[in-house]
Amino acid sequence: MQAQKYILENALSFETKHIFECGQCFRWDEQKDGSYTGIVKNNVINVKKVDNSVVFEGLGADNLQELVIDYFDLNRDYEKIKKELSKIDKYLANSIEYGSGIRILNQDLWETIISFIISANNNIPRIKGIINRISQKYGDEIEWKGIKYYTFPTVENLAKATVEDLRNLGLGFRDIRVFKTTHKILENQVDLEKLHEEDTQKVREKLLTLDGVGPKVADCILLFSTLKRFDVFPIDVWVRRVMNELYIKNEDETKVNKKDIEKLAKEKYGNLEGIAQQYLFYWKRDTA
Image 1 (cartoon, one colour):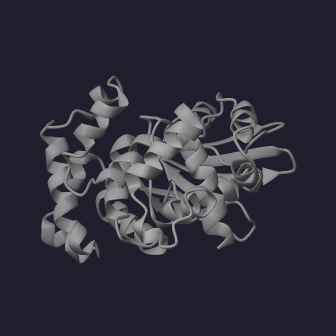
Image 2 (cartoon, helix red, strand yellow):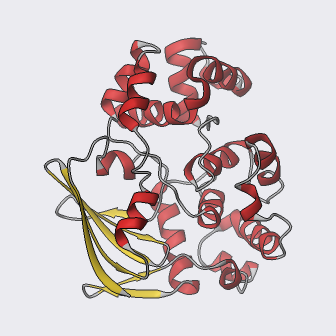
């Protein structure tokens, strides 16, 4: 473990609030100075925007510069993506302007699977609390600047938890789902490494065999993890609402068919639909 610092100069398309508050991650917390501190793999990182630069500082096992370039997808040209998407219509252009600093993170696939199973019918503070308790009990401790942080547990470590153990950590009905999925992955019934090599539909079908993974959770895993598939469009209440209000205009939004939304998103946004979804979601939820 070593303390490290890396400064990204002239940062484009990078706003901490947009990135960490757009619903894609659960292990980042805002600090009193407006920065965010989180746990990435075996590293604690603090991220602060200072004028046009981003200061990354932390303690961990990995090379900080290499880690943040990968994790924050810094080699992808989001300025180009925003310019392309903004041409589609004024609605998307407005949402992009509102969340202009969003970047889709490359989160660990295993952690993303469990995190989004926990997210089902849940709110963000509670999701964060559950993940923190799981990490505290089954992860490894890292102390930085007098504060203790905990890494997300490995498959092997989380497999030590019984259903009752998970229930006692506050998972509710998700306890058996997390337990079963953990053991399926432990037994290699779903090979996480091979998922990176297959096309989106095949990966989606395999993810849907995991307990607690429905279509929306599968799409979130595809979009927000190292699988990095932009050709998905996760649909929750906010996305259904914004798509209905902007395009479909059904008097009863609850009757809007998800297949119709998916078809519309594919037609309008093409292979960048996942990124378009994040701009629309953040804009609608944050301005509600």
